[in-house]
Image 1 (cartoon, rainbow, N blue to C red):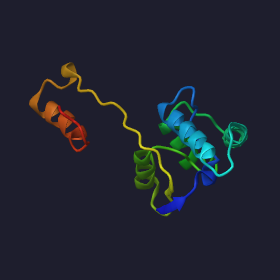
Image 2: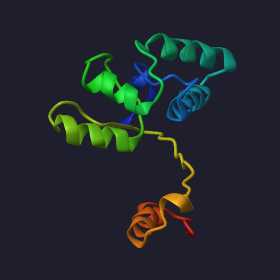
Image 3: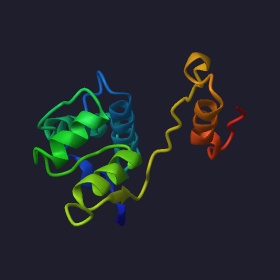
Length: 141
């Protein structure tokens, strides 16, 4: 895992921001990063964003599809995805297949989690469903 890279290292591939929640975060992170650069303006941010989008060879509908396209089909130079997707891909493909690079300015995302009563009526199912998000800050069950 490499840490400390900048968003300019990630102008390569992502999911489609029109269909993927994770891709929306990717786009917002790239836009925010571009606006925070010294001497930046909305015009330079737009130019950076246009470059970011132009480097995406395939717009998959979601993070899983993008990961499959990148890891199994070999499309793209860089995959911008959720941390858990990256670690799952390492586990599936082998740690020597690619590197995980964490940007120097990451974005914190907190997707909502819901417990569906009808799907967790048995004691075992409910315990598993509650254990999954229990480690997250703020989970009240």
